[in-house]
Length: 407
Image (cartoon, rainbow, N blue to C red; front, top):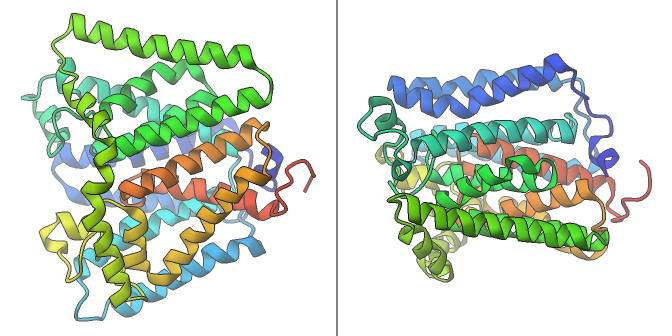
């Protein structure tokens, strides 16, 4: 399968790997630098990084017929943004935020068509590990650092004390750790203990569900390849690690696990908590089927006074947020992704490790989109579009759902 999603893609030399690692690490850390220096303009540093990536891959990106779904979707959003910018009902600041946080990261789609799959996953795993370590260090209940320290106070501003995060909040942290957890399961298990701790203490329920989905697919992969011993061993090791970690934490620290446990118990209530928001999304779509424009109904409109919009907001639910902002074209694009994903269960083989890894990552993202606006989370939105780029390449090249043929 590696041949399927890496054909015609650039294989990194050592120098290029280092450049991508440090640039993407810097990209991911910009929110923390901005908070420490109290200068929001630092966040714009992601733009030259993304432009450098575009410059680097410009000769490697090859477009095919199957890319027409995404290209039509992207073209529509760009045209929609241009025309709606002049609408008296559009919040210009909100749209500017939407362009920066929703459209610019779509460059990741083309990264997923130009850089070798395995190389990028290894780079991302190291970056996520760094964020996980930062999360552990900054987590108040662990008492490694003090909330009254200026740097710690700046980084933890606006973050619930019971939720682990690194530099940009627990929502994005949860998504990042879910991605790291899945990659670690399939590629490098030595990072798995860190990913489990970070994922659990992020207290993000949709991230937990996405991680569980990835773990189940890993077990299916082992079962289909008749690696029953490995399956049982992996299950036992993870179970023992989780149980022993909880026991050690409860006996040797003053950490209160009641909040995290309450989040587990409340998973069944997540839908009820968001139903009003999802109804808002449907209401916006019925009234404005062409979409209300980027940044007009998501997290920016809900959480920033300067970006307050004239439309109903959906800060928790990417499908309905996309339907509201992008209209019927956005709905059709994500319907295409979901439909091909579901059909993949029936037609694509589960014995291929690389395919299962990608499929688990895509599935984890689709699950999180139900209750969180992950395509609006800083940096992880870039990873989100990279994964979609790899996924669309796989599905497009092998639309017959036969991975055994050579391209």
